[in-house]
Structure formats: C-alpha cells, structure tokens
Length: 298
Image 1 (cartoon, one colour):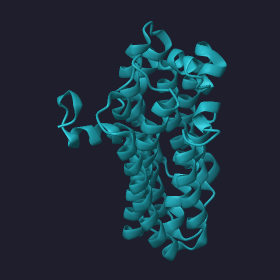
Image 2 (cartoon, helix red, strand yellow):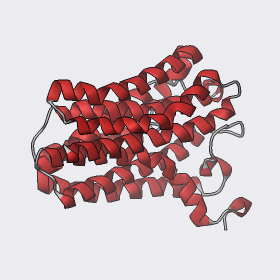
Image 3 (tube, one colour):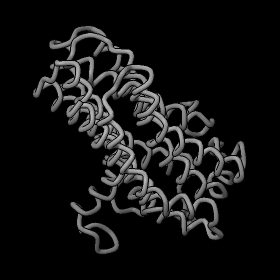
C-alpha cells in the first residue's frame, strides 16, 4: 500500500489517467478507417500505432504529474483528480522513471513502424516524444506558455490521424489532415475544460495557459468553436474529398458533449467542471471510432 491506504497498483492507474486515453485511441481509429477506405488497411501497423499512441499519452501524463509538482503547478488547492506526486502516493523519481519507460516502449514500436513505413515515422515519433516531455519539462515548458492547446491539436489530431493512415497506406493522403482537424479539435476541448477549471491555481503558480491569457469568457468561446469545428469536418470532407455519407455517422457522438457544453457556459464553481471534463473526454473517443467506422463502411 502507498500513503493514504491507496494500493500501489491503484496509484499507478491514477497517475496514468486512463480517461485521457480516448484522445490517443480516437485518432488511430479514424486513421485506420481512412486507411481501409483507401485500400491500405494493415493490422500490425495499426495495432502498433495504437499501442504507441497510448504509451506516449501515458508517458506525457506521468511527466506532467512529476514536473507540474516540481514547478508548483500542483498544490493542496488543486481542484482536479489527484496527482500522485503531489499527494505523496508515489515517489516523484519513480513517476519520472515510469514516464521514460513508457516513452522507451513507444520508441520500440516506433522502430517497427519505421521499418514498415520509412524515415517519416522516425520524424513523427521523435517529435511526439519530445513534445510530450517539453509540455511541462525543461526551461520553457509548452503548457506553461499558452502552447498546450496547439500541441494537443497538432499531435492528437493532424499528426496522429495522418501518421496512422501513412503507416498503413504508405503514402500521404491530404484528407487525413482534414480528418485530423476534427480529432484535434475534439481532443483540445478536453484541455480547454481542464484549463478553465484551473485558471486561478495556474495563475498563482505562474502557469500561463491559454485560458489564463485570454480569460474565462474567451475560453468558453474557444470551447464552443472547437465543438462546432469537430461537427463541421464530416460534411466538409464530403464536399472537399468525396467522402461517403457514412462519415456522418460520427455526428452521433455530439450528444455526448451537450451536457458538458451547458456546464461550461453556465458553471459557477470551478470544481463542478470536473463533470464537464469527464463528459468532454468521451467526445473524441466516440467521434473517432464512429468516423473510422464511417470511412470503413464507405
């Protein structure tokens, strides 16, 4: 058992933040469906891309847990889920070791994907891992300078969908970027709710997230724009790329975000946004799976 009666296994599960894995799974599902539509579905590369994406997500979560505590971003006033380093459930050095173990395992899968699809995979993998570490680590952490939203949009949207499609089709398809916009927007919406909830504690810690920089009102506008952007991509893809109407199946995911949207627009207590965060996390998972299914059926 760790401190507070929490088992060590439970503490590591908490540290990995499994609810955030929808942001890693969703773009791989969409990219795999797109590869199938283009006649290039390949099971082993698809599975390798999925596991690698999940490992990079876990590694990033663990690194954030450690470095946020070191930089004062996590303290006793935290409103979100427990961070194991701050709570003393796992020693900080072990959390950091876990992060680099996850990154190392993803690198091993990256080697396999590079053998399959060539040097572009090396560039993608290095960029993903470097950004995951730099999100909260180093002298100029991305998340502390308002670049977290851009990081999530690019790497959990554009790069993840296009990269998954590429390792199967073995060529770049422009419509993978269009699909990536939807998944990037849906995943960024998760971060927006998180940063909206933590505006006050982040500001005190000197963590200048985009929410801290633009304020509560414009952060709410940003959330609405991201949800709308997610919704318009499937019909836009039909117009731009000739996607099958089956991609509209993905719009069935939008009701999942109705409750969180109302909460974001009307909340009074920041802690209540934890419910909105959990609800928003379901959006990219459902949307990505349904979009991938739509591609495959089309």
